[in-house]
Length: 235
Image (cartoon, rainbow, N blue to C red; front, top):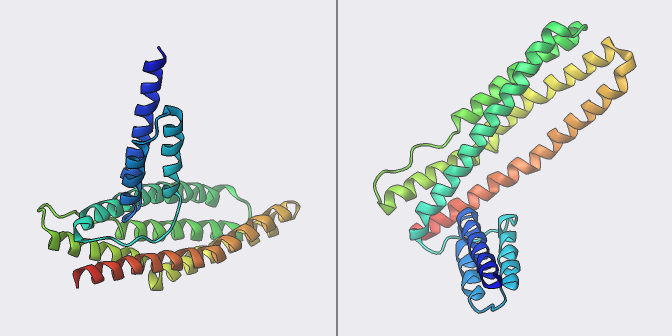
């Protein structure tokens, strides 16, 4: 019974390492593979499991690890496409929920300013959904050609970089933040008893808006680093 149980533990450790390798960021797969090889020398199954669990920390690190050669480009491109598809799905769902909620506020809230703010928030969600959908992932190359994959990867990186900076980003901020501010100010005027709650909401919206600036610009720089890596490999 003990042997079967320990074998299952070892099998679980291998599955953990395999999952970490599949979901690791581009360029970090070699690190996980090395950990998998190291685990072969760990005799105790429980120690092997803890070793495998330790490898999952690579999923939460944002360290920059460049690609070793062009052979890793197809995998890196597919990982990027998977992340974009998740963002597209989650972003469209979230903006749809907020849009429906604020459309309902137009017909239920008492203050005219707050109703106008609700309508503007709904419009800003439509604009945000449009941007998310417009920057969705393109179709992957069908042929197993390194040049085709490199071109596809470059195009997707440029599209995502531009999504997080310049006109795409600042227009999202310019459309959404004032709408929420008008909604909160209108609510505080229409219902003075709830003014503190609206002040707190307004503070949260402003803080989120400020926080989104370094967040998006940092992501734009990350995609630019990946573009620089790709260009260096192609040279």
